[in-house]
Length: 229
Image 1 (cartoon, one colour):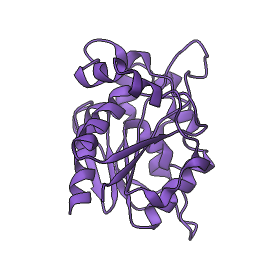
Image 2 (image 1 turned 60 degrees about the horizontal axis):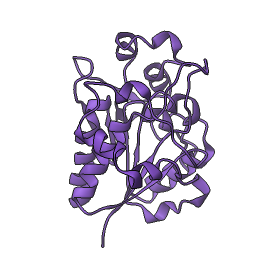
Image 3 (image 1 turned 60 degrees about the vertical axis):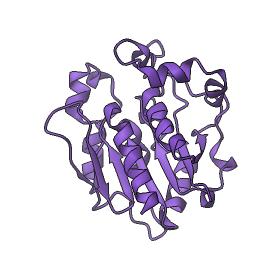
Image 4 (image 1 turned 45 degrees about the vertical axis):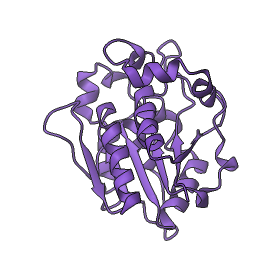
């Protein structure tokens, strides 16, 4: 039986300033998609509201635009997947072996308070499946509570885009909150690589998290390794 992966993407296309565009960091989706596709896994995409997922413009510029993202951009069928993402109420969580939550700054606005995404994540976790995130995708875990009322991230080791990386990227002043600090405030055992922007993942039981865009492949490969175990 083929494994099935649920990808989560943003619907948010701008910062607080509507003229400051953002969205899905495409390589965080395409790199993982390629890893899962190589295993023959079935893959679906959900977003907080369903429908279009805008793309982060900065991720589509050289040298960030690599072969994987170019292949996605040049494939009308794959681009169509981002125009018609599923809404949470159209998803049956029990069908999935893992959830993979992508980043891009848009997620900081529409992931944390999405009751639909929280419910999907909780149900996937509580049935013993894998929860994984990359980069800002960990914002989708900020407010996920389990059936006993505890936060999923409480006491768990994880990583995600760090505050120093926000500063070095020149966007810290535009952030609605400090995601790293918010994770720590919720009791998560946040950790990061010694150097910014290098691949880094953290695996705690069935929780797999990658720090930044360059960690997408490693995150997906760890999910595959766990699914094969």
